Structure formats: structure tokens, C-alpha cells
Length: 71
Length: 269
Image 1 (cartoon, each protein chain N blue to C red):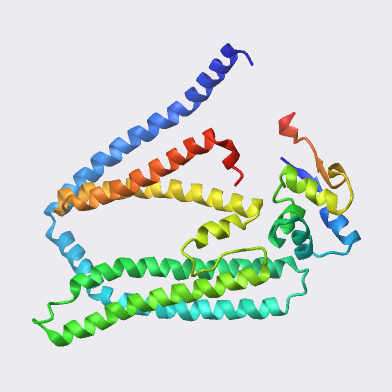
Image 2: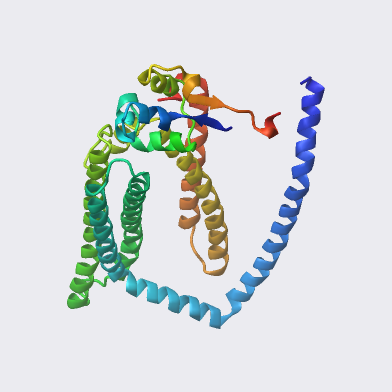
């Protein structure tokens, strides 16, 4: 289930590193790193918390595209 | 999907897997028959029994010293890894993911090996205890072997404890949100409670993998006990101990699954 994200881009806009980002949303640096690499899809709660940090909508940061096999 | 379509889908999936299942069953029967024949051959073979007895004697004699040797090697290796990680963390620029991933990986490895060494020492300590002669029969040998046995056991416990404290505290420096002291008897609970959703998922997946591994290990040990009892005259204790571990693993997993499915609010805790 490919969940694409622009977290790194948004993070760069407000100049915070992964550790600080983790602290802002209550997760570890490793989890932020995994989300940015696409290795982990955050829960709804975490996705909303991330979006709130940037005053953006969840769908501005995360996007889900249908896999060819799912069609 | 209608009920008929669901039933047809179930039948189709069963049909696909049944062939492989029956092949595995047949293969197991053939392997069982061949190993039974081989077991009777081993039972009657003086040469094989001598090899086994010689091997076991060597293990028994070495068991007294194993704890000391492995703990020393593990302690040196873990110390080098820990200090290397410390240097890398001190030089970290707060952005390089690879460095931090490498540090996390090295620290986890150090913890796994030091605690694994403790379990190995526990096992060999029991074997070693049986090798220590009666004090009044041979005082010098008894004292020497006891010192190695006790020293090895104590050393492995100290290595595991020091490694746990150092690594846990280092992890807490890198991740200030983590809670729990390695000295605390409830450390596991507090550490898990302070883990985020991704870290908890890793714990849960690893636990399930461990559960499956224990099931396979118990099956193998049960077979070994069967051969042990028929060929080498083992008594009932080994097979009952394997059974106890197997049943504990199976029922604790099944009952926890049942409880969580009834109280779904607890799933995300």
C-alpha cells in the first residue's frame, strides 16, 4: 500500500531536523525517518499531528495511490 | 460477495493448499520411517554411541570454563562497539540518517549478544554444576571448578547488566522520550509504554516471529526427546519440560489474542 509523502520537503520549509520533528509530534527520530523513506505509514492520529505542525492538510503531505494489483 | 461465492472461494483456496499439505504429510511419514530405522541402527552401533559419549564428555568438561571465556569475549566486543557508537554520536551532525541507523543497529546487536551470552551461560552452568566433584572427595579440584563455574556465571550476569544499563541510558540520551531504568523490574513495560506506534509495531511483529520460532523449536525438541527416550534411555523430564514451554507459549498467545479481540480499546495501548 504505497503512501507517498512530502514530509521531508515540509520539514525543510520550517527548518527542523528529524529529532525536533519527532519531539513536536511525540514520536522518535527513527519513526520520522521511516515515514520519510516510505517504510512506515503513520496512523491517522499521527498524520493529523504532523499536518498540524505545518498548518497544512493531511492530504497536502500524504498521498495514496492505488497499486496496479488493487484495481 | 454472496455466500455461495465466499464458499466457492474458500473451497478453491483449500484445494490449492491441500495438495502441498498431503505431500508434506507423506514426506514426513517417509522421513519418520527412515529416521526410525536410522535410530535403531544408532542404538546398536558402538562406534556412533562412542562418538556421542566422547562429544558429551568434552562438552561436560568444558562447561565449567565456557561462562568465563564467552563472557570475556562478549564483554570486550560489546565495549568496543559501545565506544565506537559513542564517538559516532558525538560527531553526528543531527541530519545524517545512516549514522544514527548504524548506531541503533550496533547498540541493539550488543544488547542481543550480551543477553544471549547470559542465557548460554545459565545453560552451561547447570551442566558445570554436575561436573563439580564432591568437596570431600577432591577438595582442590572442587574449589577450582567451583571458582570457574561461579566466576563465569557472575561475570556473565555483570556483563549483561552493565551492557543493559549503558545501552539503555545511551538510547535515552538519543531519544529523551524513552522511559524506564534498566535496574527497574518493570523496565520492559515502561520502555514499551514510552515507545511510539512504529516502535510498538516492531515489538509486536518481533513477538509474533518469536512465538512461531518457539513452536517450531518445540516440535524439533519433542522429536529429539522421542529419540532420546528410545535410543539413549532419557527419562520423562525433558519431554515434560518441552511440553510445558510449548503449552505456555501456545496458550499465552491464544488467550491474549482472545482478550484483545474482546477489548479492542486495549489494542492500541
